[in-house]
Length: 273
Length: 273
DNA sequence: ATCGAGCTTCCGGCCACCGGAAGGAGCCAG
DNA sequence: CTGGCTCCTTCCGGTGGCCGGAAGCTCGAT
Image 1 (tube, chains in turn brown, blue, red, yellow):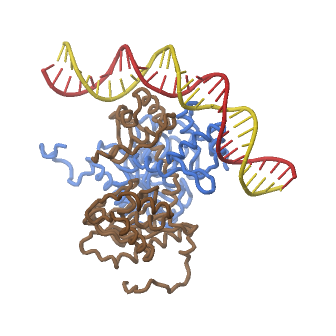
Image 2 (cartoon, each protein chain N blue to C red):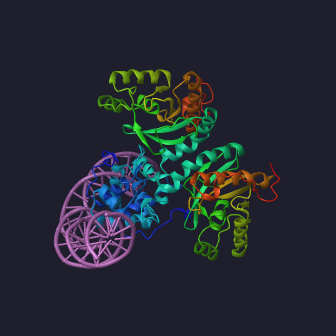
Image 3 (tube, rainbow over the protein chains, first blue to last red):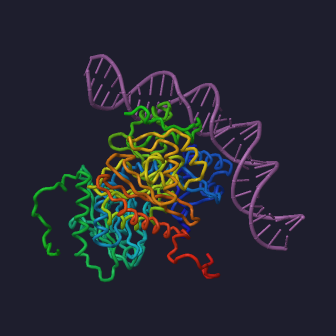
């Protein structure tokens, strides 16, 4: 896999806690199963130290040792992780809407939140025959290059936006936005339209349409997107469905702006079905 | 709260690692957000010790501190937990089949694995209008009282079966099986039929139909179930759909017995994996 | 104003942690 | 069979990180 992968390091103080967390950090996408020495190497620990700590983690269930001798993340840790409100709480309430959207589009549907300068995918429904999409549940991507990312960035606190705009932006494809002022315009458009449409920015063959999901304090807490094949895609047919689903989730989360009320207010120019 | 709640304790050696894990154990269903002193109390740690450790965990992202001052499980820990092969790997491949089953039944669909003497729910699709079901993703239930549990137990290693049969079995409802010999018969029936049908064992109003999911070494690695209202349920209409979905997942996992081609002829050489 | 609950910081003593080293198990090549 | 390799496991003495009582702080409730 990509060689630059494993180096997602932290200050990782020499405290015991830091070492334990370092061991957990050794696992990642593309490194789901490791040998003891592999862990020690990646976490920068002496073998005997790693042996002791890993042993304790395995006894508790944070790690599991397969019959092949490799260590993997244990069910118990997954269980605890499932309590994270930004994944499970959100997911539980969003699921029905994701289902419906998935069922209607028969394409990739994604739900993501922001963590620092990255987007983290919290849920994903992928049709087997849909575009191969370069993300996975629990995976991370840069904010500037993805539909969900642009939405999350557009509504992020100003300091975050400035930091991202100031930093160099990687180009995943030739069509990825890498120019700060261009991104600034894109974000303004997202705020104006309430959706982001990204064509070929992650993968030249894929187009994504994303909309914001709001929490009870009206802040944008997540973003929802549909990814379809770029060729022949008709965003106008997709936008309403994505907007509606995002609004549904916002309502389920208690966002005041998504209250049910007899409304005839529709965005101007809504001619589509 | 119920006093027996927080006591899901471990030997919890006084090692630093043990204390850290103890802190994580303080969180659980019904305790997603805790104060620092709450954590200290539950984990049995002096306040200052808890303060230091929690601080380190929060700095890394294993815990997050909300604006209300409460600590919750952090996104980073969820991310690591998502790497657990028994959840994500299984989930990813099972999802399409769960979708279809859910779509067809419009009821609760659950996927679970066994951990020790309990079943752990790995995925769950719940129709908003379906029977309220007493389980959640990441939740645990006893093996003897649930459909998925009986399936997992029926195909578990003999020692596990004996241990469960020897231990006292809690009755969740008057219809829960609590008699060892009765359970033994039920397990035999499951092995014979390839499905478990549990009526009113968890909740008098719910009936569940469960089937085994096999991995590439032909062992039962998970169990799939549908939960419907007990009243007027017609198991015969459900069993085939559940069996089919379970078989589909088994095939996706590479189980030989679920190969598309009817068995009988071992094609020579051709499929040498 | 008084109280109490919860949080944060500080610091000296002590003990749990560290990690080098030695030994064993499995594998491959010669 | 032997040698060399990688990976794992266990042991043990020195020491530096951890422990936790105590003091001070910020709330909000009485």
